[in-house]
Length: 412
Image 1 (cartoon, rainbow, N blue to C red):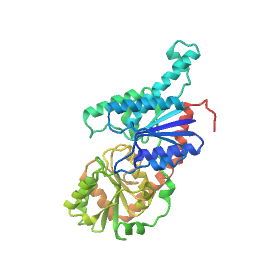
Image 2 (tube, rainbow, N blue to C red):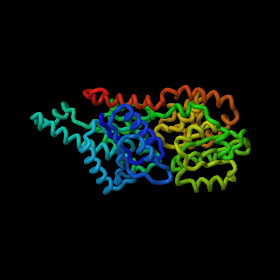
Image 3 (cartoon, helix red, strand yellow):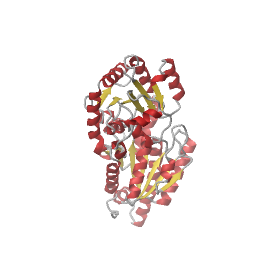
C-alpha cells in the first residue's frame, strides 16, 4: 500500500514516537510510506532526524503549524490537497488535532474528485450511488492520541475543537484511539459513530525497557545517592503536566523521608518557574532536573528510579505509565483519561483523584515506605504491559485496519 502519515510537528512526544514506530514498521513490511510534518522548533527537542533516517520519504510543510492561523491553515490544506492528488495514496493517516482536521479535509476533497471521475468513467449520474460503489482513494484514518478539548480549556475553544472534529469524523473511515477513554469521551461529545472506532495501544520498543540496566551509573551522573528512593516524572515541563503538585507533595514528605529524591525527566518552558518553586520550598538538594534527554535514555533513567509519579491533568494514555511498568516500577497517576487502563489500584500502582495533594502525598508515602510493595506492584505491571504495548503488535493492528479498508489490494 501507499500510505501518507500527517502530523503537525515532530517534537519529542508520545504522538510523534507512535507515528515514527508506525512509519518505520510499515516501511519494513514493504509498504510505501510518506510522512508529512510541519516545522519543528522549541525546547521540547525533535524527532525529525530520526524520521529522515527511517528510509521513507519525509515532506516538511512550512505552513503546517500547531497554532491556529486562518491564512496558514488554508495554505496548508491546499498544499496537502496538491500533495495527496499527486501521490494518489491508498491511505491517509492523520495524527494530532490540527493535522487531523487539515489532513482529513484535504484527503476528503481529493477523494470527492476521484469519485466524480469514477462517475464519469462509469457513466453513473447518481453521485451517492457512485460514492457507495466506488473504491476511489484515499481511505482516511485518524488516530486520537489525546483530545484537544478538556475541562481546563476555554469553553469557546472547546466548542471549536468539538465542532471541527465532528465535521472531520463525517468523512473518516476509521478512528484509532490509544485508550478506550478517548473513544468514550469522543463519542460522548458526539464525534463520529461507535463502529468507526478501534482501540490500539501506543506501541513501545518493549525490549529496551525489559533489558537490564546499570542504575548506579545513572545515579552517579545526576548526583543521586545509591540508597536514595527516587521518584521519577517523565513529562515536558509544560502546562497541565502537574509538576507543581509533586513539588507540593515533596514539601510535606521531605522531612519524613530524608532519602527521597524527585527526578524530573524532560524540559520545557516552565523550567524557570518550577526551579523557583523548588527554591522557595528550600528543596534544591531534593530535586534533580535532567533537562532535555533522548528518548533512548528513558529506559535507563526509569531503571535508576524506584517510583513513577505522573500528575498530568490531560493525556490520551501517557506513555510514561507503561514505560515505567515495563521497567518493573510501580506508578502513581491522577485518574485522567486512559490512565486507569494500566494503573490499577493495589495491583500495578495507585490511581488518585486529579489535583488531590493529600491523596498524592499518601500514595507517595506508602510506596516510599514499603519496598516489598513496590516490587509486587512493579512486577504485576510488567506482566500487564509486556505484550499489549509492543510496537510490532501496534503495527500489526494498524496494518489490519488498512487491509480492512482496502481488501482488494494485493498482499505484499
